[in-house]
Image (cartoon, rainbow, N blue to C red; front, side):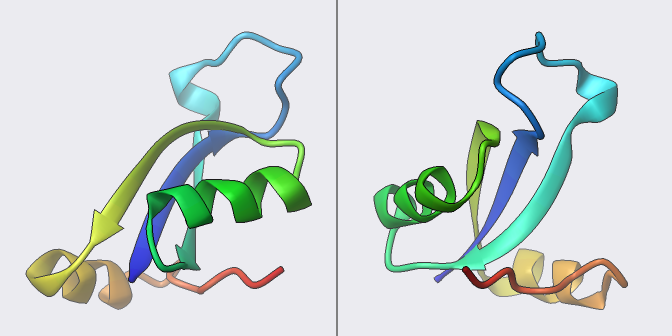
Length: 70
């Protein structure tokens, strides 16, 4: 499955909506997705969204769509 992860680059500062970034990652489930990110980055994860069907097709059309691998 492919997930879109919304995150802040650091856990030190308070989260601000304007600074929220996203990445795309392939994992078996949300738990595995969160574990991969926590083990490989210092990011503060805000939300993990599963992408499928039309929503996934729409995101793939976006020029920023690129799967992140660790």
